[in-house]
Length: 115
Length: 112
Image 1 (cartoon, helix red, strand yellow):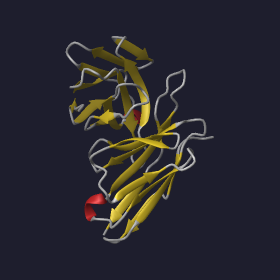
Image 2: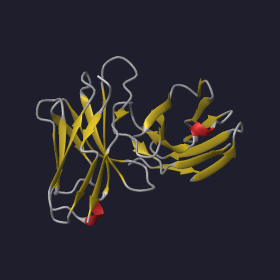
Image 3: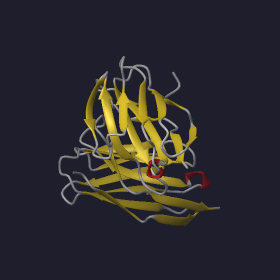
Image 4: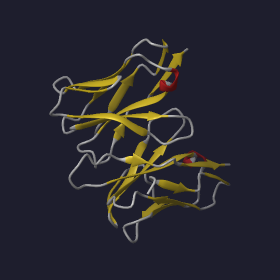
């Protein structure tokens, strides 16, 4: 396993369309996180999962956003009725919670542009 | 909730000089303080972290210090090299596997 992967790397869509992003974590990691990063800012926490359970959602995650991790492995983040303000880099990270350092490893991100 | 502030926002140093980035946090429940390096088009990469039971940690040219009483922590990079040029983020979290709250970032340029 070479790390966290995200697909697609880039997505351009028109306002009002729905988009879905996928994240594949490091295989033995039970926690998976989604962050959003706008240009010139630090990443902002959106939500995270432990196995298939969604444990916390940020107030940033409006009703148009939904995330799933159905089998406790990969996760999807869907944005419905996209708005120009949704344009950002969407980052996924994963970690374990067992003994050890348990640092979060980030993927390369999906850059979303809403026209 | 937690708020992390970071300064300077931009930093330019000559190759071989040292670079220092300073951060403050607000939530006394935070016990884990990672530092990330982000290069253009890539996700953040952890370069060093420090936990609240430690005041200082060093890894080759990088060192971090933590003052939990004052809620300050800082990153020191010595003998800077052009490949150190990137955006650096400080962050805070209750544990390494809880949500991470990031600072706004410092864009470091190392001039050859």
